[in-house]
Length: 166
Image 1 (cartoon, helix red, strand yellow):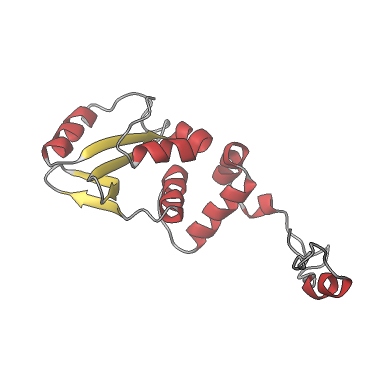
Image 2 (tube, helix red, strand yellow):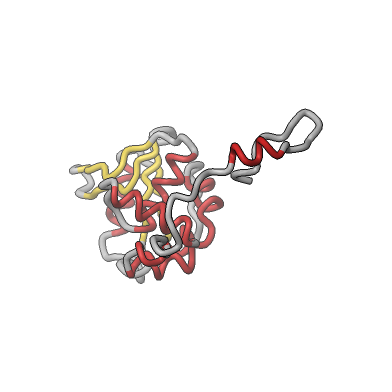
């Protein structure tokens, strides 16, 4: 736990270590801003599903200039956290499409699909999937709802080339 100091050889924390390790308060009670006040309306809704901590992480990613939907940023954060090499928003003129992520090992074309934009299969999704397959990609669609509820499970399968059914 933060602020408790190091545990000594016999498992006790001395009073001097406890005092020395306690960080000074950075804000007074009047200056503290609720985390939810910093979030956009979109992130406030998503925070109910993914938790306020992850929502704040997405908020900070956007402040740094990262682009993408919330599910795409969650996937990107997962890939970064697991040291997976990828290319983001890779344009493939041969298939007339842009990949959300290209996982370099295994040539996996990872497409993050949102329920709002893809309530059912889009007319050209099968054509794009076929074109990507002819190019040597293994196409894996990851759905927004799965990203919010089962990120680790879905992504562990996705980087192995296993698609989770919608």
